[in-house]
Image (cartoon, rainbow, N blue to C red; front, top):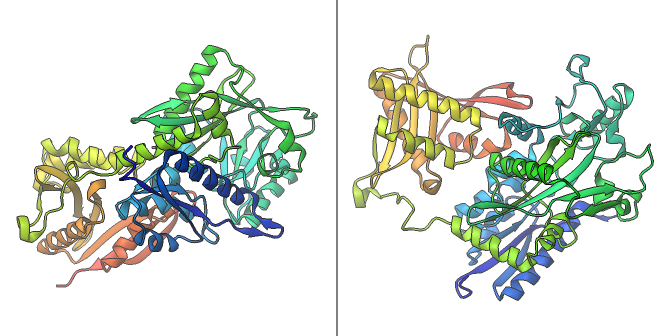
Length: 511
């Protein structure tokens, strides 16, 4: 690593304050900052540490930062906690390498219900579960045999999980645990099948794009009597004066047969790939009585402080902490687009503009790769995109799906698909618009939309309709449409899934 060229900005969230001081799960980030700073000193890499409180602080910091690498330790914000997922995307927008997982992987892993669906779609076993939104009660028809564990849908660090979260049977205690999530955390609750067995934490790092599974760790529940829930809740992780904190003991390597260990390692890697993880992550498992593994969650932003399980797995693998920090920075730099490899966006003065043309059969693989590399679309969404793409190529200009690609220097860097809305007079749908990940932030999306509107107007179109999701991950998409003069015309609650509404934007074209 060339020391004269690399400098690092350690970016972290300023811990929240609770009634008795710093919130325990937040205060842990300060230990991470100290550990990374100590490692950088040993590596003789120049660095600064800056704390932020809210997402709007981030572009202010990045805009004035000369460092080439952001070591991302932001784990939440004081008011809008989940906005921490967007820090990697912002770092990339400012042309900086960013350690850890990218925005899509972090968004997916934080949403426990969505990640469960994606993992199951990949054929990976997860406990059964049902979603209960605030204002609703658990329907008996949705219930499965207990015992149950009740957890918030979108938190890390075991926040919202304590001994009362584990319930043996349906009834008043189960409903009370659900209400606690709704009222105290203002979140959707997941009622999940409790796998009564051994608990494992599997840490994974990346070397040159390939995952390496670190020694498997098991959590032993020592001196737990029959009535004490064997779970790793908030007390076990953070409350140092609790019984749980002192009697949940990490054992590395976990005493497992080679066959079971191999299966868990393979499943952990498959789970990381399904979530689009990068650099490092942790996969938590439960084993049932027959040693069948069930994935509890994929944590794309695990605690890397010296006392946490991830650092313990590094030590068990013989990897010094500064080696891990160095590897993480190298991974981030390798992902930074290089000018020689990045498709350039030509200016009108230099090349006369981009070439937007009909999508042809030879463009198919480039468009599919472009969509996949965004890491933004679920597998089922990718399947639909391929169907639309194939139909547009097969039928050409005479078909319903009018499919176009953007080309520059012989490379496909964008895709657009539109078509007339059936049973309407002059209404058109924009079905898909996508820009190569290395070309985002250069105005290409706006130029594609301008082209789409011109094409629709040329076909006597009067109204343009676009649809998107209400999820946090799609906030930049919604803001993009609003900047182009589109206005929200409808919101259909729970359309894509529980808590995931369909937002419909429209724009009337000038005649």
